[in-house]
Amino acid sequence: MPRRTAATLATSGEVLDLIRTGEAVTRADLGRVTGLSRPAVSLRVGELLERGLVVERTDAPSTGGRPPVRLEFNAAGGVVLVAALGASRTRVAVCDLAGVELEGREFVIDVEQGPDVVLPLLMDTWDELMQGRPGVPVKGVGMGVPATVEFAAGRTESARVMASWTGVVIPPLIRERFPVPVFVDNDVNVLAIGEHRGVYAEETGDLMFVKVSTRIGAGVIAGGEILRGALGAAGEIGHIPVRDGGGVLCRCGNVDCVDSVASGTALLRDLRAAGRDVKTIPDVTALVRAGDAETMAMVREAGRRIGEVLAGAVNILNPAVVVLGGDVAEAFGPLVSSIREVVYRRSTALATRRLRIETSRLGAAAGISGCAVMVLDHVLSPDAVDETLTNRPTRQ
Image (cartoon, rainbow, N blue to C red; front, side, top):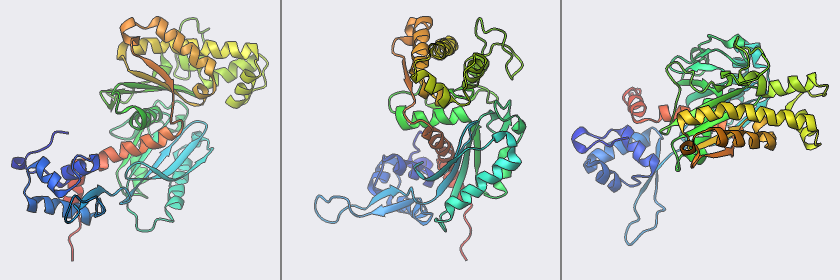
């Protein structure tokens, strides 16, 4: 973010941003970086202290005389409520203002029951998790859902595994109980945000996160920001067709989409058709570990088909890292190896010269982290902070 000079009066929100990033940790630092006078710095710091967004520390080492007073962002000054919904599992958590999970709960719920059932359960869980934090302000809510999302409106569209949610505008339903900013995005987008910010942010701004689970989808980080596209449909690689798919009908209405022939759902379907008694992905994992040849062949073929689609995406986007996540990608080494083989063989030499294809380091935690980052990047932005300070209640 470009810094304002004293002539344009750096705001309290911009001062907070300097403190959060560590660019300025004392009043003298703030004066030097912004060009503001001492009284102007004190006024802005005072506003942030009053709102609990900043705290003062006097335990800094001294070089002689009175030790300097350090300013620190107060991550304990509030919380954000987050939920990462999935087809097979959902995690609900409370995070501090640094995005660190304070407490969470994971459970199995059929999201197809619809928002009338699922949203009250999420909100009840948040209430339970907040019981030990009386007086701590909730700053925002973030959710990741397995559907294409029109981000600006928080409207779910083209749901992959929760068709009963299609067309639902989620934020107003949450704000009836938690009157704070509410942000909703595609589940793989929040995974991409969480993995990038938590692992790769310092080394690259170009990353693609591919979730291979019950369904297949991708989230794209370009130039350090999530790429949503015009209406939120960016990253829907699951509905790119593959060659020789056998004419399998996809839930989107087309045939031979990679989601319909290589996802966890497809693996389970094909293995059952081959006479294997499998109900869940762990059942498939057990067959792989037992060295079942037909299961291994199906897993490798799924990897090759996913790699075929990813090779095209790599040619178009030229990411520095492709991160493979989701329970299928995390469970099956042969699938990951097949993906790597096809991508490196079929993508251009320049696009793969420095390309790394890795499995997720954060796992499911990336979803919670990404939801928190999505909220915090908005509610702690300089403009949002300035707005809350401007609209604060008048003291009696």
